[in-house]
Image (tube, rainbow, N blue to C red; front, side):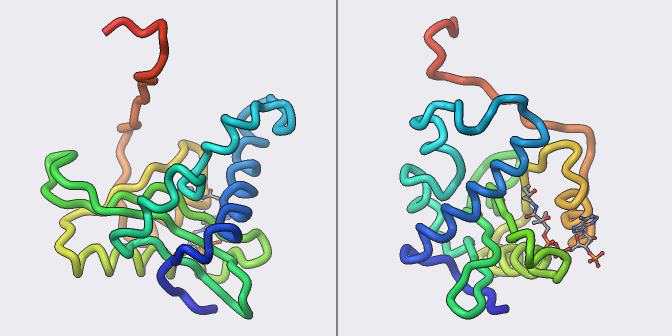
Length: 165
Ligand SMILES: CC(C)(COP(=O)(O)OP(=O)(O)OC[C@H]1O[C@@H](n2cnc3c(N)ncnc32)[C@H](O)[C@@H]1OP(=O)(O)O)[C@@H](O)C(=O)NCCC(=O)NCCS
């Protein structure tokens, strides 16, 4: 399995794999039927969506795992500056491995490659958003050496018309 930088030509295959990983997560956490969710909302989900994909290619920190022309894993990451008391950090937005390729160190290699490259670029830390209860992802991050405490990222919808600021 080759780990290489993600390119524009990977968009369609990575989209399929990221959406299937998101659906897998939703199936466990949300009672909604995927098919009943609004199409516009689903189209905007994930770093591979048309709106976001390009912004994860610029830093060269997004990678895919490829074998015989098929994509079996992906990681989306970029550099963020001056957040979390750090001048430069690697922000890991999402990653996933095809169910057939799991437990073969593909996720480990993808994450390691992103962090190595980020460190070469001068990043001082890595941050990754992990859903609480996602044991495989938590174990993977711990294996690399990530520290996890009780902090969670709270989200605010700034486009909510009912929001009073
Ligand atoms: C999380 C995920 C990316 C792991 O990918 P993977 O290629 O299977 O992981 P690896 O084989 O590289 O595993 C590396 C380490 O992670 C841990 N790990 C991975 N899967 C695990 C599982 N199912 N249960 C417990 N630990 C697990 C282990 O410590 C493992 O090391 P080991 O094999 O020496 O025990 C994969 O399960 C996945 O795509 N899940 C669905 C999408 C998702 O949750 N993405 C993360 C969003 S933050």
